[in-house]
Length: 306
Ligand code: SF4
Ligand code: ZN
Picture 1 (cartoon, protein in one colour):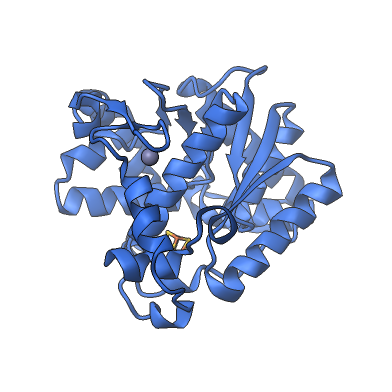
Picture 2 (cartoon, protein in one colour; picture 1 turned 135 degrees about the horizontal axis):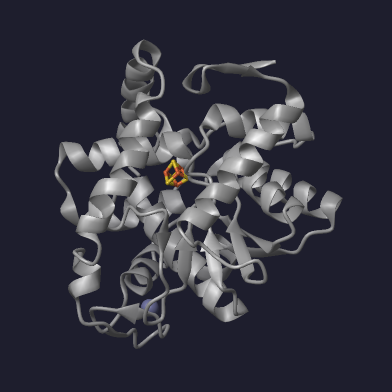
């Protein structure tokens, strides 16, 4: 039995699976995320959310391949790659792999040092570019990611605290494809991390429990714990905070981000859409690949930020 106060109920294994399937199905249909015969590329990290998502989509009959990006974050990356490969092999699923060090000559700790960005900023930018590129190159209809309700509510809180209209305008559960960018969807936005962990447990999915060591102490985790404290006092306020934003505020902000307003041209090095001659990813690669490798220990304690 799993106790879920926000649903005011206890769930047995079979009903928990049913709840997860229904919530994902509702998210996909309410937001018109993708069609039954679309080809999907699921970004997987080896953690509970992305593996649960891949499993749920495949079980529901979607044509979903995995995409794993090796970030070079010490033992954490080695372990996350092992979990993803084992998951794909056991189920006979197709996995696309990209390794930053092998293919681009850098890793996240080195990029952080070389570009003087906080590690999560260098990481987020690298992942966004590589997810987009893999989806376009592979002819996929959408990139799907395992962001859950806890993630999205925490990001929303951070954006609201700064009234960051640019990021608020792009915080929708689905972003349509536009010039050179693939469609992006987050089918887990109606499920909490407790629910995705329960899905993995019941389905026998061996996920990596350890979180990225760079995440420790970052603002995103702090926002999560603030929301958890509110949720404790007042069950279902977290889902109301995020889902009511999606319902009532997101439509008012649609199309108001800087990226929507900017004129896009093509990166002269990689061909990706960009607002300058050379895209931010190619600039990051050039600076980072020229830098001596930096071990992850040297960037721990630096402020990670998602
Ligand atoms: Fe990347 Fe930061 Fe997430 Fe680690 S916590 S995987 S560095 S975005
Ligand atoms: Zn480029």
